Image (tube, rainbow over all chains, first blue to last red; front, side):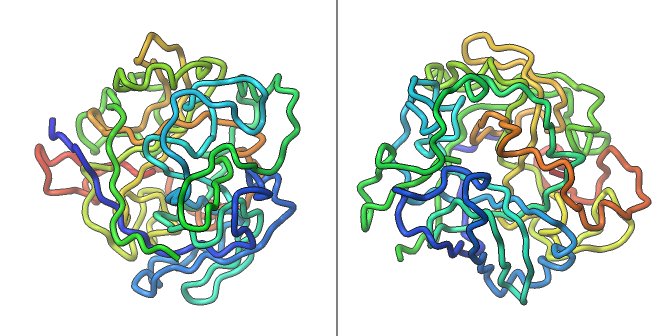
Length: 173
Length: 173
């Protein structure tokens, strides 16, 4: 088996959103009140975007560039108890890869207009995938502690603060 | 805005599946006939797995280590017509990040038993996220060309062949 000690990514574009810092940023697309923004893809990929307009929703796969360092256990925004990091959508992940499904409003060349954004402005985009209900929708799946939490929190605060430029923080995904 | 010309990932574990090469591998979890396997996480992350057992399904985020190079336009397994790469789940992506939702059957320490696998054996794992229907399930979303295709293909073939060790090929995700 080949070993892969380090793998390298190159951003394919940038996400433009109304959210400049995590405090107050929705923690998931479902809580964004439809927040709109743009996904600006590098010109080199224009042909690869053909036919994306046929999809209501797309997955954004992105780099959580303002997340704090990995923590094994966290108190996520949506609960008051601690959980293992991989049982949460907290950004403090070993590989800070974020995943959000957004609504696709339109496309002009390499710019996608999207809604339901929960991503910080300037976030590097790694991949785009069409949302396909046949593959991705499991409405009845049991959702562990999410099903019993009493927290109704919908926006981020300072708990996953990274000491980055501007001190911006990441919401959960 | 900080620039991120290259971002680095380190695998957190390995996916063990019955599929040694892409030809014949299911192209999505939904087509796997429940294929079972294991996700073996590095010991350093055992505490981060706490409470994952409460979830029926988990997202596997992984490195498509046997995918061929990026192509702007592809004829995906599920159609006979060409589409922009980002309107497909083909593995020939600029950043070869794969995404599959699998059923979680159980956990023993750092080993997860999973079903509905559509991933090649030995695939490096990058992240694990709980599947949360409130965030992830959009059963009514319009699915572009998937809705009109006449292809019923459920397993991969050689079209996204990489000239890698053993000549294994990647299914779509």
